[in-house]
Image (cartoon, rainbow over all chains, first blue to last red):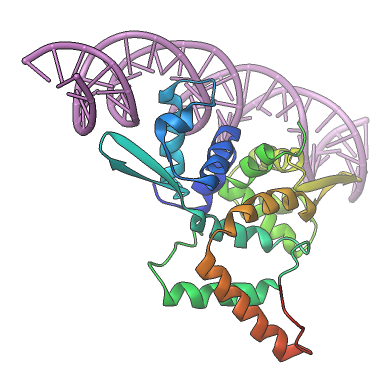
Length: 116
Length: 116
DNA sequence: GGTTTGGTCAACCATTCGGTTGAATTTGCC
DNA sequence: GGCAAATTCAACCGAATGGTTGACCAAACC
């Protein structure tokens, strides 16, 4: 499964997963440390991390026997742009911003899928 | 159930529901007309509309025997703000975007002192 | 009044989700 | 080598999802 609007929004729909993302905002963390503040099993957290990984919202890298989790905020871009299409509440000019994003993406890394 | 990040993101996680929201971007629509382009039963669409309503993303008003659906983009605000808390993490992209904005602004109006 | 139209309700079904537990696997430590 | 730590795997469970169909209800039409 790849990062799409479906997988990203679904990943964000769970409070545990949003809390994990917020924790990773501060720094990269090992799986065990991610699990520590939650009152659920390590296996459950491991599953949540897998879902976040499939959505592209985090990446996991194993060093030694420890697997480090890193926030990947770029995965929020497509979803954020999609949402901004609905609101006048955004101060930023959407058309200009989208044009900017397109230029930036086509010049940059791998093409991100538009998921629809 | 009230509009929360949980209900909003969960509602957005389904492609049918996102398509419905996009349709409502153009104009208010009756339930039957919303259902028309989809290859699923009216009852299924009715359920999707209930989920969107509980998330606060649309409102429904019955006039005569027709129930009208109206987009409520304000419901996206909290979710959008939450997401943008993560987007600010890209120093490179942010710099590029600010440069872009400055160019955009200086083309349209008097350049302001120090964008801060 | 009878029938169509617009929409929901209720029951059902298969699949997915979020969680558990216990066993397995890999890596680091003595 | 042997044990402990870090993580995942596999099987299971109950609840929620997304869909169906058929009955139902309310408003409109002839």
